[in-house]
Length: 209
Image (cartoon, rainbow, N blue to C red; front, top):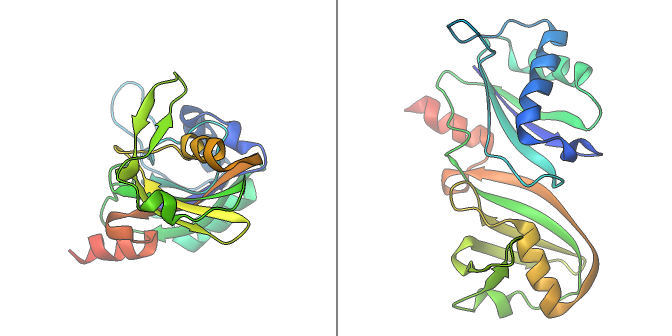
């Protein structure tokens, strides 16, 4: 099996999550590598995506598990040769055990630009913090904010992800309402597995057990 970490930028962030499966199938066919297929009347490629993110959110850290015996470095090179603009394999690893790329990704780090500078401790020391979702409902989310760091120009926010997701655009909107800002831009810089592990460290852990 192969697990890849891929990015969606330069317009590819507007490809819906389910459509990414179709894009991956097309890329893999162009690559000419052998992959596993499901059984039954309508067999499909055994390609599994990580949990979806909001449409339009630029990301450097999505994951995909592919049933294939291809060498990881060869797979990465071929993938990037045949992938459309905006989709790129950033890392690629072979794994002997199936990675739970949907359930075991528990946090993600986002770079948010366009907010006015503020003291992150004003948020981190709060017992409660509220955001508003797209339906206008207020939600208390302080426990979903893992860390905040401001470098003077960019806010790096590590937030809960997966079954306990806090959308970064909801957080950015709430912070903008308090501290001000303009032309907000968000990029998902990284996603972390259990206990904050990188993809490589996570695969080493599950394959060792």
